[in-house]
Length: 168
Image 1 (cartoon, rainbow, N blue to C red):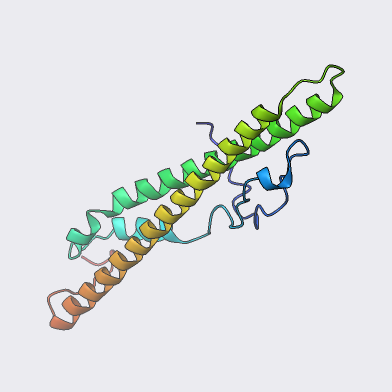
Image 2: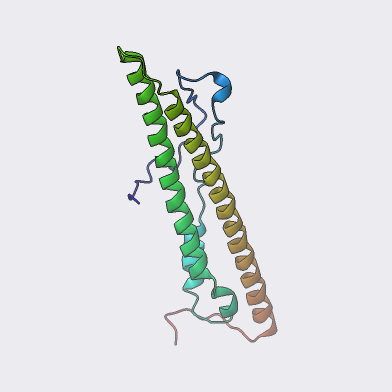
């Protein structure tokens, strides 16, 4: 998997028309209307939670490194899915252009249809990844809430005291 730049993360949507001139309008797949990567402060929170020094919420923190790995993996996969979708669109357009300029008529429509079906599957996988990433984000949020709640309970009961790192 090629390491893609994250310059396109904040593009608004992919709602422009990818219709091929080779196929009728009813043969076109639906386009993805959602932005590919919602911005969040999830990685900052995971870093803070993973570096907690007091150990009081250690049972909750056991899953934090795994969550960070899963979120990073999902983001990388979604980036490659977007790149693959763009390559498929470019290839379908190029095949149609070649077909129009050929003196001998080649029937490239079946290949264009296969490319569009592959693109549709890429969009479906991207939606599944987006839903999984959203569930991971919600899980991390719930872990953070439970950690804060337990920390507050411990501070209120006097078991836990907050010390600054500079004081022994």
